Length: 249
Ligand code: ADP
Ligand code: MG
Ligand code: MG
Image (cartoon, rainbow, N blue to C red; front, top):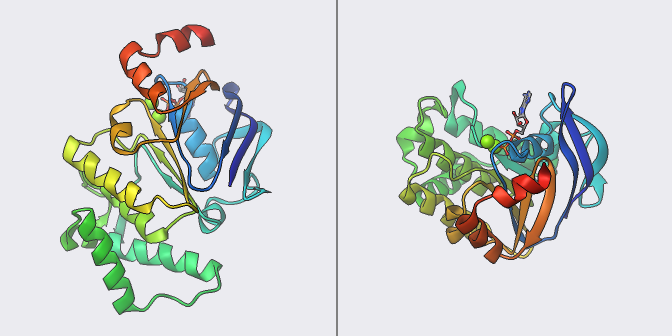
């Protein structure tokens, strides 16, 4: 489904990713853990297609096709969803309007008609209800003045509506209290299915108590330096990243 091959990337003259290989199959949940500054957010930005980054080597394939030349919106309609560590604010655009536009863009790309108002209201209310998102919040501009937890729940709502093939969640747990963390984790777990995959990026093991991964990778200094099962996350929680930081150096 997602295949990252020998990915090298830089910002300016600084190489941040130094040869990442990662294969994610349908139904799998991968966790990428790593110390601060190891390149986790850089990887998610490059997957999203943010343009300050230069891929210098390697490829990223979605269902066998390179996405490197695709614009961010094309990647999204191809089924890739990114939830950012720092969700952006969109002043002047109500959440509800944004969600509907995003959903219709995807439907259009798939040759489907626009969703009717009653259908949209039904699906959005149902998904928002599960995420404790009020109708008042849906009327407010996207993420403007939202708390950290509200922003993350709002990202989870976008994901629930768009039903991506593969979702990348970058530090969804940062800024979340335990109740909000559980709500977001439940939203992810509700979407787990044999034909959908997740890459959950996190510094802390805590999130992985709620979204239990199949495979855990350690990213250090722009490379995956170790891969294991869920027990690897517990080991990291206990021993920290020191061993991997030294490895990288
Ligand atoms: P993580 O998400 O794992 O904490 P990041 O991907 O945010 O790591 O950052 C990886 C490295 O790239 C860090 O050393 C960071 O300082 C550097 N970096 C990130 N963004 C930029 C940028 N826009 N310009 C220069 N360096 C950057
Ligand atoms: Mg960081
Ligand atoms: Mg980060």
